[in-house]
Image (tube, rainbow, N blue to C red; front, side):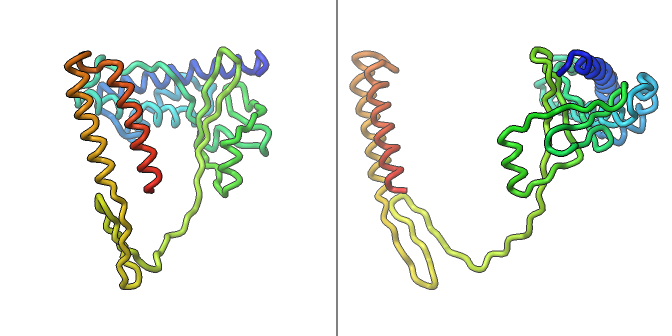
Length: 243
């Protein structure tokens, strides 16, 4: 991106980070884990910090902070939190439908404290794969700044309407170690796999190698590992053939 345009997003990231940090501290101190409660209690104060920002950044900052606080408080309850408060390290700016919009397939428009900024986008194969399979973009997105390469990384969410699958019939399958039984139209078909011979053979071979090589070279020796690797590859090949 041009330096001037990227500087705008760097300023936006700093303001957004400050809002999230203050909201996270308040949420952890007061045990707030719901976005609606956090927004009701702190929206006006956060909004007054940066009146030049579009108001919806205060909404998305509350969503971001509530999710961070919920995760931290859960880890703290499990005894896995090392610090008294969570540290806001990496920041992805949350966007809603008022803060961004797609303008075709070549650019997007983002609302900032300096007005709307149009950014050219480079689509990857993953995006095109979803679009070509009938998925549609949702209103929510996230944008992260790559300061080293001076670019924006946009994270999108897709959705797709699906219909309920109604099965027409059922096939009963009984999987055992040596055979698989299938019931189709009242008839039972038995497929013999002889898998136990392979599994037990592998077990007894490993046992004999352990007994022989551990006495001479010690546990975990290199010759024994080479043999185990060869046996494992052979067993894997046989199981693939059976499948």
